[in-house]
Length: 240
Ligand code: HEC
Ligand code: HEC
Ligand code: HEC
Ligand code: HEC
Ligand code: HEC
Image 1 (cartoon, rainbow, N blue to C red):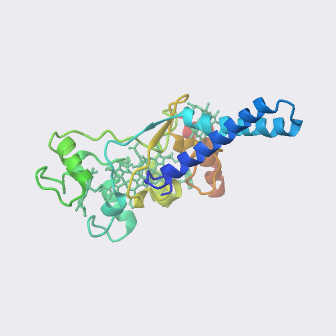
Image 2: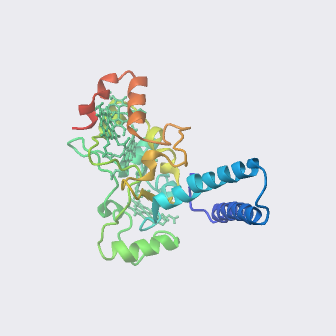
């Protein structure tokens, strides 16, 4: 996934921000030393200033960033060597299955993990993250407080069984490549609404290039219309 916390993209971004700050500062320095420059310079400077505040400072300030309690590696766990299941979907459902009443199990509880990670003293691999997981959660029998990227506000009704079984939609259509990820991206929460940034969309302008980039009300309705299920676009269908 492109929004991983890889060590390489952080310096690049901060360098980019730094050079932008430099440009803005040199603009002010210029203004002080040459107060009577043409209007164009003022216009460009103003534009730059607005872009800096609107595209960089505002989004940085708008979202609080939280790190997941541990890193979970989907690529390892969804591999047929580790999780049983002929198709990829069966392997996803081994952890994210449906209960007998059709409700979605969501993120698996510790009891699913300890089917394999049963002994906190003997790790299955050599990954340091597993050691931390065994020590802090398995040994203490403590649930992991995962942060849910796709979490909708409480007023929204959504059921996985309708979309996965009846609608025959792939997980990827709404969640992108999360099921293949090796590291977890940071969870970003909108300070004003308290809602995950994934709902509004990851990129600054809220643009949508893939079906999974955003999941606002209009995105739900757009797919219902496209799939010939306009009957689900009445308010009471999604807001019970
Ligand atoms: C061994 C159990 C396991 C398997 C197998 C598994 N997952 Fe997960 N999944 C998890 C855990 C634990 C989390 C919570 C951490 C995280 O966000 O990745 C999670 C979270 C997710 C989320 C994030 C939901 C959100 O919005 O925060 C998605 C999407 C997801 N899994 C999709 C998949 C897909 C697709 C597959 C199959 C390719 C799959 N998972 C296989 C355990 C599993
Ligand atoms: C079907 C067996 C199985 C299940 C179920 C399972 N794991 Fe694992 N897990 C493994 C194996 C095997 C490894 C070692 C892989 C390696 O290091 O090569 C591993 C590695 C890990 C690691 C270290 C690699 C990483 O993800 O960074 C963590 C952490 C981890 N598991 C957490 C969990 C959690 C949390 C759950 C429950 C949601 C879970 N596992 C469920 C088999 C399983
Ligand atoms: C039509 C879009 C769509 C499809 C297809 C879909 N999901 Fe989701 N998923 C969502 C939405 C929306 C939420 C948030 C639901 C909410 O907050 O009420 C979510 C939430 C989740 C969560 C977090 C649940 C929790 O604990 O809160 C997991 C895990 C997850 N999905 C995994 C999957 C897997 C695995 C598949 C494929 C079998 C899948 N999803 C298919 C849209 C989808
Ligand atoms: C990629 C396509 C797609 C997206 C995105 C999507 N849906 Fe759907 N949805 C469907 C389809 C297809 C059906 C009809 C399933 C059937 O009945 O066969 C459906 C049915 C429903 C239903 C009626 C079935 C039920 O569970 O009562 C609700 C409610 C619903 N969707 C809510 C939502 C919400 C809320 C979102 C956004 C968070 C959303 N959907 C996003 C395709 C989509
Ligand atoms: C297909 C599903 C769907 C339908 C139909 C739908 N909504 Fe929504 N609605 C959502 C989702 C998802 C959100 C949360 C994401 C967002 O704010 O876009 C939402 C958010 C809202 C909010 C903001 C509430 C908050 O807590 O942020 C209001 C108000 C609202 N809807 C009213 C309506 C009204 C009125 C209608 C009928 C004209 C309607 N909705 C139809 C899915 C739906």
